[in-house]
Length: 117
Image (cartoon, rainbow, N blue to C red; front, top):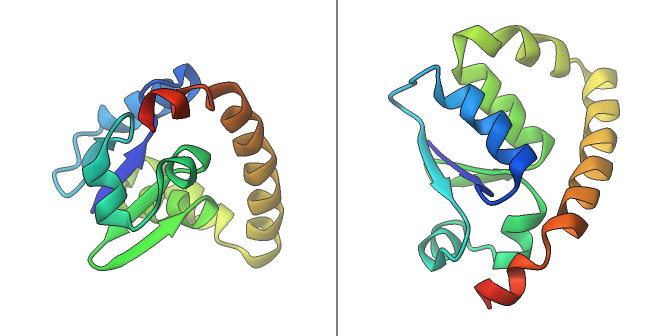
């Protein structure tokens, strides 16, 4: 499983650094900053990758809240988050809140696109 994240975003990096401490062998962490290979592997452009966290598991690419669910499911320490946020009504609320927060992080970090493109 590959997790595509923005290592140039301080907030994103801080969260991913917590997950990396768990040293889950089946997770490959991929920085999307100036990374054409990430675009090719996910079939997403730099703007789409910058906008949300993405995970590629086999041939399936998930983004946003669904990606976080899969990530938490694979990490024993964070499995409680998976079990809580997978509940249908909670997941819907989580998805909305994630999209709002991700949008503001995107606005904050979109200057990276000039470097990427």
